Image (tube, one colour):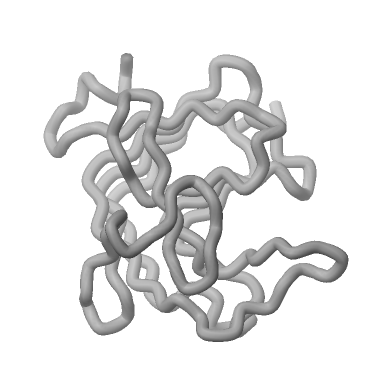
Length: 151
């Protein structure tokens, strides 16, 4: 089965993603297809690069666009009924300053701003869907609400 399901990422920390490919590739959390996943207690410390490199042949930027990015490139597939649950997250720059939707962009990448998107349950969170070719069902749940992710 090429669509992973019932996956849980818990108590993870990502710092300075993309440092190995500066200004080109790197996000704290990036997926390339799945059936069901829970991200719980994830911390992300990321810079917003001053001169991000665009992908060859397009205007797409692939580095530090948001905390969670759901790609469909490289054959990434999100089948009907897919489910992403995000619960308990921390998103800061490399100095510890919290990113905020007020200083970000809504649903579309803009240079030097982190993308925020409204989840299926109406909660605003730092995630980005660069392609709208497939439906990715994202739910953002409050701390300690285990039932939220299972419904």
